[in-house]
Image 1 (cartoon, one colour):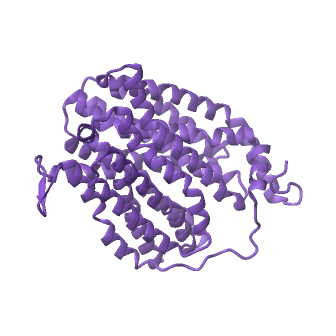
Image 2 (image 1 turned 90 degrees about the horizontal axis):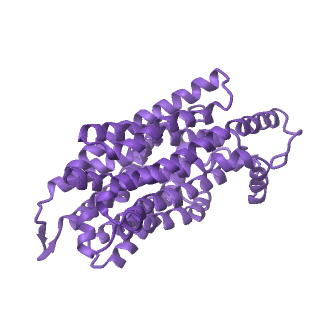
Image 3 (image 1 turned 120 degrees about the vertical axis):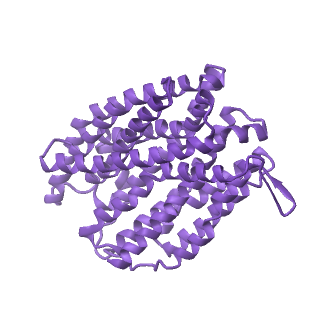
Length: 438
């Protein structure tokens, strides 16, 4: 288990720093807009869809490649590529070059999660995998906050006037990209300590085709239409908030990103960790007490926290109140998102879980990472027509999405319970309900 713990720790670090490369533009909104004379909408595309399109779409074929080749080497190649592209973003001289660099970051990171989950599963015995994967998931739960903290720390160490390196002058936003990509090489050397594990549990496993998966989802469409959609709505709100929170604190409270990044980083990391831990506790506790649809029911608690917090935090007249309610909202995001993988896997045969998680990540990525930041920018640019209205734009996106999410999760409790009961019956008596058939 010592070797497994070392592997998880290394993958944890790699994932944590991948979040820095992903989130660093959020702290650089104003200088990037000024450097390239772009609007909020153009910046949001840079922050969102430029990354999300390549990250989510290529995630499916790269995920299939994970099942067939050397996974450690795939992560190694991805790490070096996304680190290089992050540094190239700091050398961009046009908006188009910056877009291409961000798309490159998405390509590199697309392989990380599928390969990391697969490696951990083969390093850890089945009876300990839940805890091992939960430890790794924490790097995702607190990653956004930690990345903002690290980004703020980087900005605080960079002179406001920039630096001259090798005769070339670099602005602070450029240096921030260069610094964010620099850890790639030492992390790559650290990854060499991870040995490719023997693939476990391949012999005798049943195979489910895409047709089998789609048939199963179709039979239980009332469940999966809600179960696979609500995380995407959570992602729209969450990524929208995280992408624009530094800009809001700068515009409304004149707080520079170097300072807000440090505070937001600590706040998001701690609140995300708290929400993730609470989600697992409630899920296991309610399931042990045989509460109907126990794992999916956790989402109702999440939305009841998110709705008031997301509606109020951008409008608060003081920094303390704004940060406090934002922390509550982030805890709610983590509470709901952490419930998704457990809820999905509990109502799916083992041979279909990978496909379902890939679809879940695809929807969450395209809608959340891509549309989340863009939806807020569209509100400021084309509905309110004033970037000073950013607080109201955040509310206008968060509240309707939250209400729809609450409805989906509330109306999905009974269908989920029925699907779970049928799945448990088929698991106990596999000949009575073939996989993928009613």
